Amino acid sequence: MNIFSAAQLYEADKVTTERQGITSTDLMERAATQIFHWLHQRMQGAQVPIHIFCGIGNNGGDGLALGRMLIQNGYNVHVYIANFTDKRSKCFLINYGRIKDVTKNWPILMKGEEDFPEIHPDDIIVDALFGIGLNRAPEGWVKSLIQYLNSEKAFKLSIDVPSGLSANGPLLDGEAVIMANHTLTFQTPKLTFFLPETGKYVPYFEALDIGLDPEYLMTTQPLARVIIKAIAQSFYRQREKFAHKGSFGHSLLIGGSYGKMGAIMLASKAALRSGSGLATAFIPACGHDLLAGQLPEAMAVCDVDDKKITDISLDTASYTIGIGPGMGKEPETLKAFEGLLSVVETPMVIDADAINLLAENTKLLKKVPKSSILTPHVGELKRLLGEWKNNIEKLEMAKAFSKKYEVVLVIKGANTMTVLGDDLYINTTGNPGMATAGSGDVLTGMITGLLAQGYDPLVAALFGVYQHGSAGNLATQEQGFEALIASDIIENIGTSFLELFRQEPPPEGAQEENEQ
View 1 (cartoon, rainbow, N blue to C red):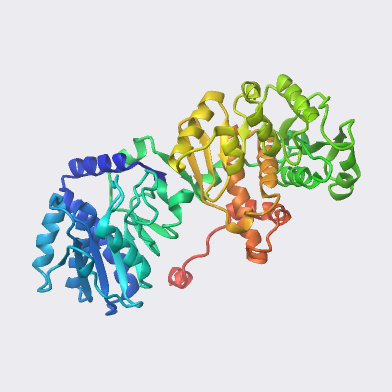
View 2 (tube, one colour):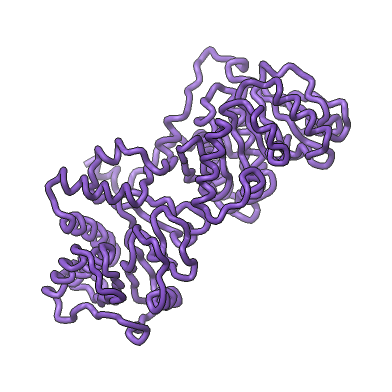
């Protein structure tokens, strides 16, 4: 599940053809065969009209090869070529010749809007107009074609990427992108699938193995890494039989203010649920009774002020610190935060108002302990980094920030992304129900709890994000999206750990086959 750039994938194609002694056309045939098998398995010869729209590059060549295979297997196929330029790729021309050898109905050359075909809602549209190398938005009647296809209710299947998107570039024109129902991408997912601006065009995708050179894929530094269950399993640290609570660290959660005590309570409980041996909440005095009544497992140390954090006067050397939830930005709180940064030397988790204070007082960034974990949502990230033009620029700015201050940056949202220097990691758990008050406070507590147990800061961030999303997914099985609240995520943290190593049920009928 590594993600590569368009340039790297082109290089992978070249290396594969050289090492395997095949041509680019052979590799294209392999890719088209995979798509054909995917369709054939689901359609089983059904005579639903299939409309394949091809460009004049290699993506169009994939579409022509697919069309030929479908025709040879008796399907009702209509192939169209968007003839918007005289330039054609070599593989396109070869497959154009091949498809003309198997049908009397040669591909229809489209030259304008007058050539747009009539499509029934029950038909299937296969999009093979543009591939991953697109660097200019579709224009003129080709843009109109994309808009026409989007207006049709027929099922839309895109090959490699929805036409109008590039693999790892910014969105070129949101009105000139195929709104695919499903995308069959080659070998690996593309970065564009996971970004807010472009991911909406790829609601579902599958990566088809087309046999690209495994050595190249294993030894090439990827653009990003996708964190899936198998990787999350490798993060987990087994507990020893004779361990005790002191073996698993002491989390110190700092935050809360008058009227905002819930945030720090959520974080404190999440730290305990994630395995922290001990947890102490440093809070304004007004929160003492609330914490004692609602979370008896946690200890409380109270500020001298009743309503806000003003003086974090305790020995922090024995704690792993998470700071920010519900803390506020009062001048006294800023002074207390600055004092804390002056004495803490070990990595800490920084969230919410602590991030906002850093953004407003950038000189403090140099005092943040190396390898600390910052967990901003999009608004906090903009305050920290400044405005960006698109999501690609956002990631580049995040990498630069991470390198400059030597910190881990967790960019919260759908497909939460974790940045450490030039390395980018993409999470695969979570759901829209987690867009609820306190969800981020739970994540702060979880990461702090893992960090307290001795997990490496990067691993604590990645594992915490994965388990946070997994717990949210489990919670929605009972609550649905709308009713989910942050406390539900906490109540499912334990189940998320159990789920991590739960065996998947065997396919139906597998047991009977094994017994025979």
